[in-house]
Image (cartoon, rainbow, N blue to C red; front, side, top):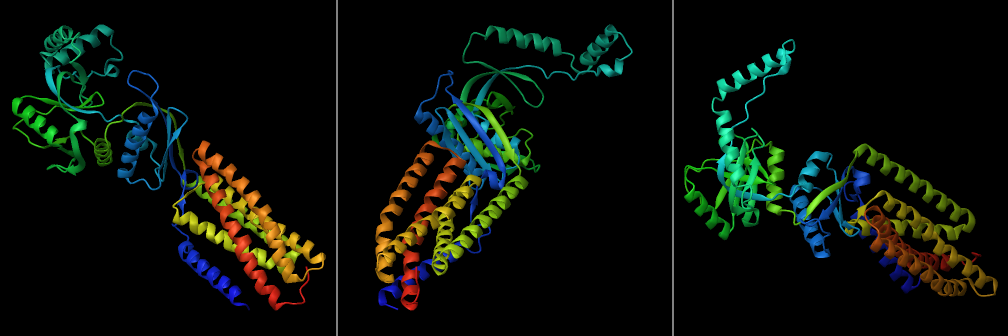
Length: 466
C-alpha cells in the first residue's frame, strides 16, 4: 500500500469515527419537525391597527416578539417564519394543547394600569326560568325583580347613575368602557398610568393563599409613574387591563414602588403564559388566526416508521443492484454510500437541522443520487480499460473524466435546492436542506472514499478486470 493511500485511508477512518460519535446513539439527537413529532401549527395574518397592510420591518418585529414568547415557554425546536407578504407560520413541535398555543401566540398582550372613573354595579344573578316553567311570564318577571331588589336594592339606581356618567363621557376619547371578566361589572376607565412597555420583568409566583399570581417589575420610568399613581390613589381603585379586558381593579392600600402583581383567578399554566406574554412584549400588529391545526404524536411516529422502512428498502435495493452489476467494484460503491449517509446524519445533527417528512424524502433521494456518481465513474473506467490502458491508469483517467460530469449534475441539483429553500417554507425547506447536504456528502463519498477504496483494492488484486 502506497503512503498516499495510507494517508487517505487514515483521514477517512478519522472522519468516520468522528461522525459515528456524533450520530450514535441517534435517539434524541435529531431535531424532529412538526409532522414527525406532533404539535401545533398556527398561521397568523397580520394587519396594522388601522387595517392597512404591514411593512417588512413590522413583520420582522412581530416575528421577534413571537419568538421571544415561544422561547420563554420552552417549546423545543419551534419554527417561526414568514409566509407570503403579511403572514407568519409557527410550528410548535411537542405542544399538544391548541388552546394554550393560541393563547400564547395570538393574544396582543397589551397591558395597562388605568384610572377608575366610575364603577357600575355587579349584575345580579338570573333566576332560572326552569324553576318557573309552569308559571306565566308575569310571575317569573315579578319573582326576578323581587330577587334582585332583595339582594341588590340599589342596582337600578346605580345602573342609571353609571349610564348617565357614561353618556356624558361618550365623546371623550381618553375614556374607555371595560368589563371585569370574572363578575361582569362595568368600569369607566380614564388615564393610563403605566403600560406594558414600562415592564422590565414578569414571572409567575404563588401568593399567600397559594394562588397563581403574576409579579411584575417596572423599569425606571415605569416605577416612577407607578409610584406616583399609587400614591395619588390610596383608598381608590386602579384597574389592571389586558387586551381591553379588566383582570382586576384592586383598591390601593399604600404607595407602591417598582413592583406590582396581577391576580385574576388564573390557573398555574395561564399565569405562566401571561407572564411570558408580558415579558416578551405586546404584539406590534393586530393578528388573525387563519389556520390552527394539531398533529398527534401517533401520526408523527407513523411517519417516522414509514420513512425508515422506505429508506431501508430503497438502500437495500441500491446496494443489491451495485453488488450484482459491478461485483467487487460494487462493494466499494456500497461502502462509499454508507459513509455518505453517516456523514449526512452527522451534519444534520451538528447543524441542528429540523428533520421533516419531506426531509426524509430528500435523504432517500440522496441514496439513489450517491450511487449515480459511482456508476458514472465505473462506466468511464470501463471505457478507458477497453481502450488498452492498465487497470490503475483506467482508474485515474475514469475519475478525472467523470469528475466534470459529477460536478455539473450536482451543482445544478444544488441550485434547484437553493431555489426551493429561498422560495419555499416549512417542510419544503426541510427537503431542500437534506437534499443539499446529501449531495455534498455523496460527492465526498464518490470522489474521496470510492477512489481510496479502489486504489487499495486494485493494487492488491492485480488480476481484477473491469
